[in-house]
Structures are given as C-alpha cells and as structure tokens.
Length: 633
Image (cartoon, rainbow, N blue to C red; front, side, top):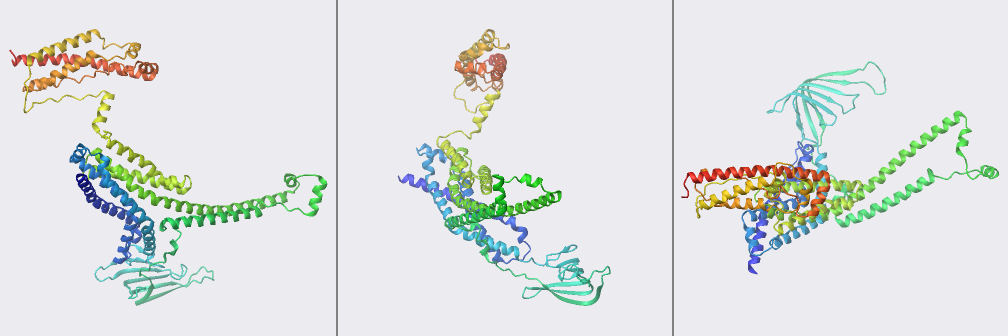
C-alpha cells in the first residue's frame, strides 16, 4: 500500500511541475492576444504604470478560466508522454498497475481545479470583468499625449489641425508651423502660420500652452446670417503669440454602472434573476405591443347609425370594399392609394422599431443564458482536456515541447472553433442556447472517453507503422529486404542443407507456375466460388523465409547482398478476398465492385509469377556463390 502512495506522489509531482510552467505560459499568451486587440486604442496616451498594472492584473484574472484547460491538456500530454518515452509507464503497467489507477491522483487534482475554476468564474471573475471593462473604457477616453509628427497634419487635439514641417528633438522647437483652428466652427476658421513655435502642457494638465513666434493669423469674418459673395477676413502679423488650448490629459476613471446590464459581470444567481426580470419585461412589452396593434392597426370599423340601418335594409353581412373603391372618382382613388401607402410605410417603420426592441431583449436573454452555462462548461473542460491529453501522451509516448505542443494547439483550436461558433449560433437564436454552449463539451467528451479506453487497452490507434502496413497491403506496396553482416554470429549456416532447400524451393516454384496460368485471366466464377487458401504458396514462402533466416548468419557480404533480392511473397492477394464462400459470391454479384476486385487479383497473380521467377533466379545466384566459395565439401 505504501508503494502505491509513493507512486501517486511521483505522478502528481511530475504533473504539477509541468502544469505550473504551462499555466503561466498559456496565461501569458492569452494576455498578449488580449492586449493586441486594444493596443491601437491604448498606445501613445502616457498611461501611468499603476494603470497599466491594473489592466494586466484584471485581464489576467479574467483569462485564468480559459488558460486552465489548455494548460492541463499540455501538461498531461507532456507528463504521460515523458512517462512513455522513458519507459516509466511500461514499468508501472508491468507491475500490474492499470493506466486509470496511474492517472487517479491527477484526475482528482483536475477535478479540484475544475471546482476552483467554477468558483472563480462565479465569484471573482465577474468582479474582475467589470473592473477590466471600466478600466478599458476609461483608458479609451483618455486624451493621447501630444506628440506632433513631422510632415503630416496632427488632428488629435479637438478643434485643431496642426502641421509641422520640422521639429527639433533637443529643444522641442517646432519649425514652419501651420495651425487650423476650428473651435469657433468651420465657417469662422482661424488660420495661423508661424516660423517657430513651442507646445507645452500646463501644470494642472488641463490645458496646452502654445507659443508662436514670427507669424501671421488669418480670420474669416463672414457672418452666419448674411449671405454675400465677398467674404471679408482679418490678417494679423505678430512677433510673439501665446494662447491656451483646452486639453485634459489626466486619467479619470469612469463610473462603471453603465456595465450592469452585461451578462459577463454577473454570477449565476444574478444571471438567473436578470433572466427572470428580462422575461417579465419582454412579456409585458409584448402584451403592450399586442394591445396597441389591436386597437390601432386591426381595430374594428365603427359604423354610424345611418350606415347600420342601411346595411340592415340591404340585408348584407359584410361590406364589399372593392365596390366602394370602384365607385370612387379617379381623384378619390389616387388620394385613397396615397393615404394607404403612407399608412403602410408608417406601420412598417413602427413595427420594425418594435421588432428591433423585442429582438434586442431576446438576444440579451440568450446572452445571459449562454454565460450561465459557460461557467459550467469551462469548468468541465479542465477534466475533459485531461482525459484527452493523458491518454494521448500514453499512446504517442513523446515528451518535451515538440509533439505535445503541436497536438495541444490543434486540439484547443478545434475546441475553440466549435465552442465560439456554436455559442454564436446559439446567441443568434438559430440554435438552442444550451445546446450551442454545450456543443464543444458534447463533441470532446466522447473523444476523451475513446482515447482513455484505447490507451487503457494499449491500443495502437496512433501507431504509424500499423497504418503504413495497412496502406501497403491495400496498394500492394512491399518493403525491400535489408540484410547486413552481423557483428556476432552464434550459429553458422549449414550450407549443404540450405542448398538442398533452395533447389527444392526452385522446383516447387516451377511446378506451381506450370500448374497455374498466372499470366492469363482467371475464371471469374471459379475465382469468387473458391474460398480455400493457397497452401502451396504459403509453404514456399515459409521455406524461403527459413532459409533466408539461416543464411543471414553468413559472413559473406556478396551472399548477403544477393539475398536482398528475395521478395516478400503475398500468400493471399492472388486468391478470393474472403474465406467465406457466401461473402465471395455477394462480392462477385456486385459487378462494379466485383470487377475491380477481379482486376486487382489478376494484378497480384502477375506479380506472383514475377516473384516466383525472381526467387528461382536468386536461388541460382545464392547456390552458385556458396559453391564458388567452397562453403561445404
């Protein structure tokens, strides 16, 4: 029992060492990706270190639930890949410990991480999310630092366009300055040109102090109320000119109460309450819209007393509006159609607005429901990704940062595509919200169960040699022999017996080719009716491999090189495909498929004849080499 406890500590320690590293790497990558989305709006504003520290802190907190599954996947792949690569996993299994028992301590730890992820998303995450979005809005609203470039118009100062031809970096002096002042409106623009100038920020950081030297000012004096073709203006020359420009460069935190309607800043209890409130609001608004439509658009026609008496006298149950329209004059018809068109356009516009408001409320409800389920699915992803990563590592048996990183990224990309795509479809209303949010879990959970089952059974599902052998068999691709001189030879070949065996094999090959017309087309019916194996070819192959195994202990390099010409015989490919007669008949009846198999078998018959001739020829070379070297007397 003590040995098992030590094993649990060893496995858990190996996983924790890798998990601690992969978690911070994944968190850093996600933070950089998040920062990259907003870098254009935040750069160049002179934000203080404390503000940037808050930004990275809150963004890191909000990205922890997303980083955990990827970190667990990568750490599990690397941990069990290292166990497999160092044969530690093989030693554990040889001691009678199944894979699921080896994984148990890490499974319990991942369950704990999933529970902590759920608690984090439900309690800490919403608060961090609200602080982050409040901080982002505040950072976006902060005015940028004044850094006027050379040779282009600078328009980040509200109401001004400034052009500087040259700027002295040491003294801060601006050369050949052109300023367009639109603070009084475009019609009353002020244009200032100065040979030199300097721009400074006041001590309270609320204004810019502009110093201009040796310049001119042009001012448009056109009045807004007077229409004239001649526009008067005023021109002013100056040696020095100083002016203040309104410019608030301080960082001011905005009130985050406007974010209270967002679903990602609420816990599950608050989301449930918000959904109830939104549904009640949508229901009351819908009822109000329905009553409004009934009393306005679809209201019952009100008849006067005289019209009612007239209808009663005519004994009619309804009013024929077509007859009323046909009785109108052309002018009345035109007026009626115009009024109807205007009325329909007004109704369409009103209904579009009401439809937009209803759809917005429904979309908000779906967004709340999706975020409610997301807190559960992200927590379960920690467990599911472990049951994908650990079995894959045990099957692939590759540790380090190479193969595990590639596989982890591919799996996470698939997860992210499924999750984001299905969630977006669910929020749009084209799919059930719960199904869309749980889609990634429903897809990956069976994958994890399949990998766990296969790895526990020591399956070769990811053994490349197995797939290579299968495709070689399908396409008839064979391996070539690679015999080489052995460093240590225990048993010397008995050359006399080997020569007699080779002569017997050559005779068997000649007899087989004489009895079977391998070049000719086989009989279609007999081919699919004969389900018996070809024992003669199987016996030739078995004898040939035995002689090759015996002669491979030779020290003669010429002899070994000659034996590399022996082919690997396919003992079943030239016969009927199945051992069951009924299956062969069924395949032969299906003419397109049966015909393809028939031609495929004929191809292997031709190759078999070529291989038999090759065996006879190679046998002769090997026998001649043995006799020339006098390996036996």
